[in-house]
Length: 288
Image 1 (cartoon, rainbow, N blue to C red):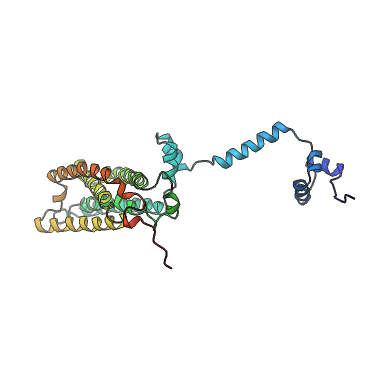
Image 2 (cartoon, one colour):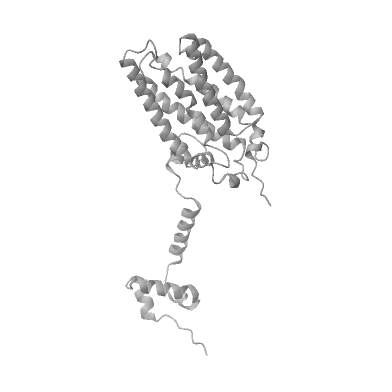
C-alpha cells in the first residue's frame, strides 16, 4: 500500500496564488522537490519557467563586471584583460591610496619650501621629483608573486600566467602612477618643464625593475632601485651643490636611451617570468 502523502488541491491553489505564509511555502517547496506527482499538479507556464532559468543561468555564468573592468572596457581594453586587471590583489587598492597621499604630500612640501624662501638650499620641486619616479616600483612589487597574490598558484595554470600577468599589471600600475602624478604636476611651483622632469626617470626605473625581475623577485628589485635612486639624488646633490643634477636635460637623454634599450631586453627575457623558470617564482617544495 502506498502511504506517501500528497499536497491537497486547496493547498496547491493557495500556494500558486501566493496566499501561504513563508514557513508554509518552504514546506510545500520542500515536498515538491521530492514528489514528481505534486510537481505535475502545480500549474505553470513552460515558456515562463524556461526563460526564468535562462536568466538565472546567465546571471551566474556572466556576473556583472566590477566598476574598474567596465571603465577599462570603455577605454578599449579587451574584456578578458579588463577582468584580469580588475582582479589585481587587494594590496593594489592600498597602493593607490598611498600614491595619492604621497603625491599630495609632495605637492604640499614643494609649496611649503617655496613659500619659506629656502629655494637656495632646497629646491621646492626636489622632494616631488625624487619621490614621483619610484611610485610605480612599489605598485609593481605588489602586483605579482605568490607572496602577494592569494590565487597565484591557481593563476599559474592559466594562459595569463608568467610574463603576461606581470607585464600587464606592471603596465596598469605605471599608467595609474603616471596619471595621478601628472594630475599633480600643474599644481607645483616652478616651470612646467622642470615639474615634468620625473616622467623619463619613472619610465627608466620601471623598465630596470622589470629587467631585474627576470633574476630576482620584483619586491627585491623594486626595493633595491628605490634605495639606489634616493641615494643617488642625495649624493649628487651634496657633491655638486645642485640637487637637480639628475633632472638636467643631459640626464633626461640618458633616461630615455635606457628605457629604449631596456624594453627590448625585457621582451627578450620574458620567458624568465614564467612559472618554474625564475627561482623566486617557483612554488616552495613541501618538506617531508
